[in-house]
Amino acid sequence: MQFDLHRFADFVSWVISPVVVAPLAYYAVVMQGYGHDVNSISYLMVLFFSSTLAPIFLITGLKKIGRISDFNITFREQRFLPLLVLVAVNALGYEFMKHLHPPKMLTGILFFNAVNMIFILLITLQWKISIHLFTYSSSVALLYMQFGTVALWLLLLVPLLIWSRILLKAHNFMQTLVGGIVGFGVMYVELKWWTGL
Image 1 (cartoon, rainbow, N blue to C red):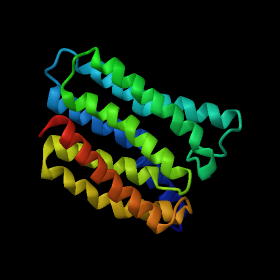
Image 2 (cartoon, rainbow, N blue to C red):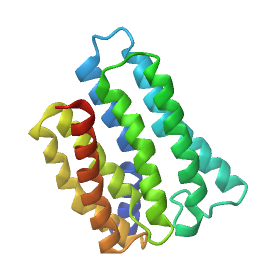
Image 3 (spheres, rainbow, N blue to C red):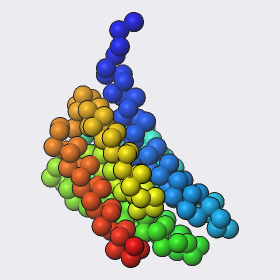
């Protein structure tokens, strides 16, 4: 049986996608860093809703009514509305999280998710930055802040993700590279400032 590169690239793209990567990172941060906290499950629920459930319902709904052509939102022009809604979702998640009085790192995640969605949205008006790479590398930056240099090993998957997005013709090399570099750098600087670590 011949190995299907396109199918493998599609598999990589789904496995290392924002709705998979972000909640896994949040689970690691909450359960390893704050698992002893009585509100740890509540923290996870707010983060999971904002990073996974809301985007899945939103994208599925938009696909159903024909506002987007596919689940990866391939066309730049179709990304404005879902990004705008996700800004609101993360801002709402931030407000919910604040009432739980969590560690500062957790409010920072939601606050800067909203801020970074605005940043991506503005870029999207003119250019198609890779949200896959942005989300993956910013998740690695979050894990680096929480667990130290051991998390940087996850950056070894960046070339694989870049390859898959290019092979699938979802992005060109520069769009993936910028997404990866900016995602890591922005999240690291934001959380460093927010937490004072």
